Image (cartoon, rainbow over all chains, first blue to last red; front, side, top):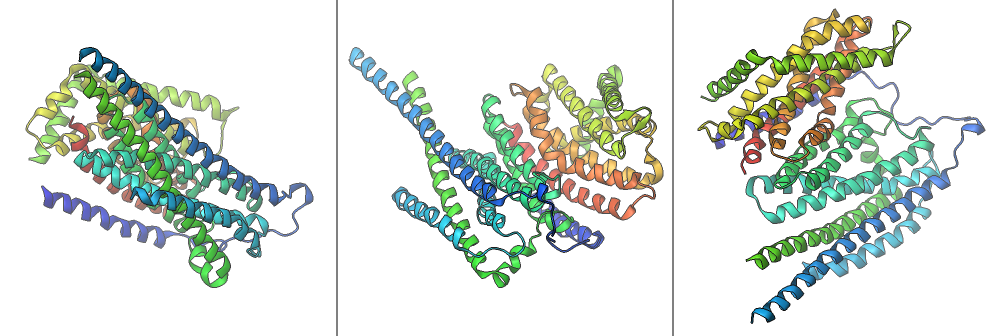
Amino acid sequence: MMVRRIRVCLMSLLTVPFTAATAFALQQPAAQDGFVPVTGVPASEQVPAAPLVVGAYAFFLLLMMFYLWTIWRRIGKVEADMHALERRQGAGGSHAG
Amino acid sequence: MRKLFIPAVVVAAAMFAWAPIGIARVEYESTMLLVQKIFYFHFATWMAVTASVTVCGIASAIYLFRGTAAADHYAVASAELTTIFCLFGMFSGSLWGRKAWGVWWQWDARLTMAFLLELVFFGYLLVRKYGGPGAEKLAAAMGIFGAATAPFIYKSVDWWRTIHPQTTVMKTLGDKFPAAWNLVWFCSGAFLLLFVITLAARVRLEQLRAQLDRAYLAAEE
Amino acid sequence: MFLKVAVLVLKKDLAIEAKSREILYTTVFFAISCLLIFSVAFVKEGVPAEDAASGILWIALAFSGTIALGRTFERERYGETLRALLMAPASRPAIYVGKLLGMILSMLSTQVVLLPLVAFLFRAPLFARPLLLAALLGLGTLGFASVGTLFAAMLVRTRSRDALLPILLYPITVPVIIAGVRGTSALVQAPPDEAIATLWIGLLTGFDVVFVTLALWTFEPLMTE
């Protein structure tokens, strides 16, 4: 059983270099290496970079703050439920006792 | 371990406070100028996604085969974090691409598979929410398959001619542009620390929920 | 022993199917109605959109495959036979392989109908390189069916399983679909680009091995309560 699993895992690992080799061997040569910038872009198509950069970083800040806020809110809810349960038990206990 | 939480938050806050200063100060890259500065957080967030996907894959496998509850907590926490960091990765890449490539989106290999990663882990969260009892195991299967596709995403830019920069860019960055090299790894460190902190917080939420469930069960007896 | 169990499960499914032919007819006619909608959308004044055929073929395959998966396991759930199967003293992966083979046969029978129709409706020379096309379709079917069988089996007792199956299945199998579409496009070109098609066949093989291995590995823990 274990031997079969190991064999299956090994076989699957062996396909990774096989696949990579196939891909590399049959890949056509790249038409261009890497990024080639375009010069002389007409003014109508130019996009100012500053809003994009600021937008990206601002989005990150908002996203993380939102996510951490949701965690905080959910923890608050769970703790509230726990306190409610303890109170109910305390009340029930004192009645039974 | 819990004692490290506050110091970790302080260090992460300091790193994130310094990061914009460092990014503003670093020289422009010659071809893309200002917009290239998105790179420092873009690359860093994908480091966080890699860490997150790895944690989710391993935790899912442990949960599926051993049934350890702690593994399940880590799996769901890292799945949520994967969706968050992956979303930011695609958003930042899109803004950068708008300037550098002229398009908001391209269906090339890496972008497509990154989008798929987001969908897979979003599906993970959907299964957990709407799958009913026993959904944790199904989600664990999704986590394992999702983690298995991640290496294809990394290598996809090398296998196919795509508009996206290849992995060789990062490998030679240290020689060509050392200031950027240092900064990008600093930002990656900040993101990884942030990942660890948010993971800890999210796992804490899961532990509290499990505690509450046990308390409910005990109260019923 | 493993193969015997798998073949037994396959024979059981084929026997049931031979009597009712429910899955065969519903899947094939669903695929044809997909094609109808696509031809309304993509064929303008008798001229199909360029290079639409390969994408449409694979989308129709994916959708009809999902229907077939849902129907097969719905049948098991309705008859409560899945639990009986799992209680049998047979290796779980063998049961998985048996269901997988049944699924592959179902998808292949859909392809037999789909291929000539797509070639006709969208004017695509699909049969220019039949062996390469067969390899693409076979490997793509295996990749899709392997993940599909696993997910459909694990969702069989879940609420909202009909909605969840496509949501979970498609993101994982899109790499297989992309490889299939790109490979088929390369074959449909004039002249057919065999090098690119072979590249995609190699990648499909890689995906298939990864997916089948993962599926075999995780089937047992997923199906135990």
